[in-house]
Image (cartoon, rainbow, N blue to C red; front, side, top):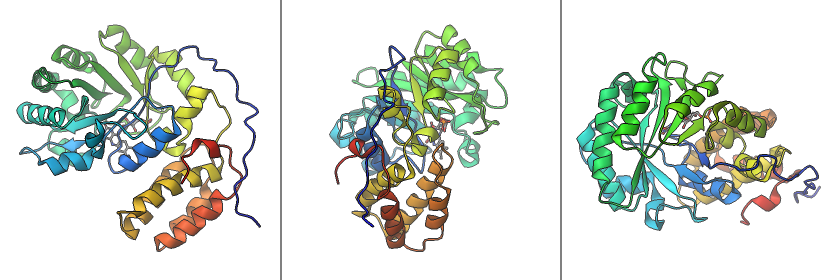
Length: 346
Ligand SMILES: Cc1cc2nc3c(=O)[nH]c(=O)nc-3n(C[C@H](O)[C@H](O)[C@H](O)COP(=O)(O)O)c2cc1C
């Protein structure tokens, strides 16, 4: 049987129903969303910007190579090859050191520096970084003010990303104010507290309260897995712009489907084909072990989405080397596909 993929017609593609689409961003995801993922999803389309994994700022100024490792796109005006802007995220708690990193990364070419006030990881929180800072709005204000001051004479602007709180939402407006008054130009809100982790639901109604209280744009984040979720989140939150994390990894075509109003979901073959392009590109300068780990990891994220890939995941899970994984993915990608035309030619 031929392995040549077959394309289905997009008969249920209709004119967009949401009149003015806001911006759609790919969420930063440490250990997952590297430059290769940003590149591929921006090629598929529908994305207005991406954010790097965080650079952890601890005790001393990082060397140039560390900045470049987090964001190789710095050498191309902080854009993917399709021209999608890549924002540079910093995580830490020392205002002066963060400010020094902000000004350095602006010097290297970042147009937007983003501050992380949402990471729930224990190691990060133990060192007073990420979501733990939501308990001290004064420190958040100091950090944002210091970074905004450091960027004053550069072309870069400052943004931030936070959760609704640490244990509860008691300080959410204080944190919003600290970020706004500190000089951030916009704020992504992951609509959950730190203790809620990634457990559904995301509280989109809180985004509406923050938006009403805010003088800067609020970008909605949390639990957008489909076109329906996207519309519902916009309706409940009133936020124009959204940031998509796990949902966009589970379905790399989702941003494009939202923008083009394509209800039809990708097939397993569409997902395999996208994953294969990423892995083949990574193959140039990464060892087999890395490819295997990333392949299993991304498929694991696809499994949490709305396209059933359980059998494929189980087959790849037991692979001991990347060659076997490539064979399985190639066989899968040879089946029926809807979105051949959205992937770059390899
Ligand atoms: C594996 C993983 C890594 C993440 N890394 C980061 C990060 O580096 N910086 C950050 O601000 N948020 C990080 N997040 C949070 C996401 O950006 C996003 O806020 C969260 O997943 C909720 O959005 P979603 O429901 O669309 O996935 C991470 C989330 C996951 C699951």
